[in-house]
Amino acid sequence: MNEMWLGYCAAGLIGIGLYGLIVNPQPLHKILAFNIIGTGVFLVCAVVARRGAMPGMGGDPVPQALLITAIVVAFAASALAVALLVRLFEVEGRTTLDEDEVPPRTDRHGRGA
Amino acid sequence: MSALLERVFDGWTIVAVSAGALFFLAGTVGLLRFPDSLTRLHALTKADNLGLGLVVLGLVAQADSVVMGIKLVLIWGLLMWASAAVSQLIARTVHEAKRP
Amino acid sequence: MNGAPTLALIALILGLALWIVLARETFAAVAGFIAYGLLLTLAWVGLSAVDVAMTEAAIGAGLTGALLIGAASRLRGGGYADVRMQRGLAVRVVAIAASLSVTAVLIVCLRLLPEPSPTLAPLVAEHLPATGVGNPITAVLLAFRAMDTLLEAIVLLFALIAVWSLTPDAAWGQPPDVSHDADPQGVLAYVARVLPPIGIVIAVYILWVGADAPGGKFQGATILASMWLLVMMAGLTRAPPVVSRALRAWLVAGPLVFVAIGLYGAWMAGAFLAYPDGAAKPLIVVIEIALMPSLAVILALLLAGAPRDAGAVP
Image (tube, rainbow over all chains, first blue to last red; front, side, top):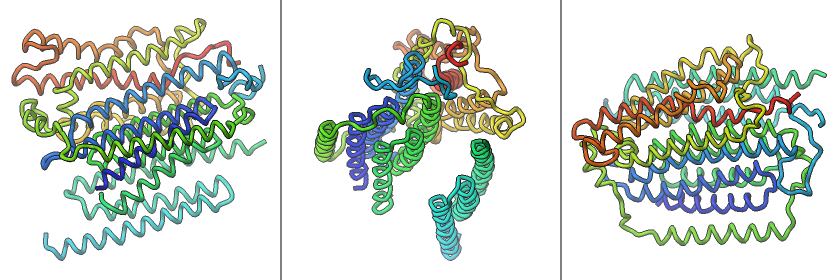
């Protein structure tokens, strides 16, 4: 019974993450929202794994092993996204992709270009 | 292990974990109500570490073996050490940010 | 975990997710994300997925949180306060409609899940003794679906190459910029001297115990990576330059050993990554021992990022 609640929680997380992905204009917040969507998907998979439990094992081990892989790959994707964002900031001096929202360029010590 | 001894251990766990939760609550109230970063740090490190210690002592009574109990206490020790180091770093950053 | 604790946990998780999405300050959102990852660890434990819980605590909350904090601090001059924060009302309404409909569709799908749930657990339990390990998840990762683990290691390597490819030409050959003006007599240096030995012992223990209890090489590799990052951030050692041959040898050693064992299996047992009878446990142990250092180096370097342009930061 309670795994279905966690399943609904996961559906809610995916919805919340989707809202954040669409609404937040800053790429770093979009990366956070993308991670929330990812964890929601993982939670759904874990609910499916839990429903496959049998007396010797608490859950179906195949989806759980795939979840471990998924968490690691999600981290790699986030690392790549952050590297792209940092490079964009170094080259262009802004962190948004919108051309009309360019703040004055300063580096991380607050000195102007 | 007799049923009475189990009952005593369970009772101790409930008392200790509840007391630990109270200390966590106190620490959170301090975090929300204190005016300053340094005072908030003070509330967090003292109250939270004591709360964690009580929770750990409560859980030791539920441990299956002596080794597991020792591991729990070691976790508490490691966390206290880490939180001391981190709060030092935070306090130093706050202090240096305040200096003109 | 039944009833009230699960409901309380769900309320906390949803509330925290909402807060992360609505937070204005980047650093606050990232700090909320770390707490969110730790709460998710409890959710995994409640679903009897202890290996996944350890991985989530280590990589999902720990490494991803550190990555995002580093990013937030590097981007601090990006004029976040000046950039128009809000989207117009129309976009918000569309976003709310989209997320509500996605959530509703998912809830319907969850209710339609088949009742005697199809599961591979009996199949795994039946073949578990042949692999020699006691933890079914380790058996799935390294024996039944070893191909997925190999491809995952290679995907991580590709991600690292992609991150390195963002290096500006002038900075190629330099180490990534990880250290932060740390005082060599300060608290950070002290922590970086005392914690790594403990961390290494714990990492090796988690690797070793993963054969029969929750654990394994991913969690151990994460701990090793974070110890190395701690030492680099305290300034006690420099990050290796990306052109270093020794570094590249460490990076490819794990996947190469894995591929070599796969080919050995193709030669001796008829299929790539098949294990000959009785040799499953030793081969699994060799793969884990070879893969853990490579994984640790890859994870640490993914967090360190690409070398910065030496001319941009005065």
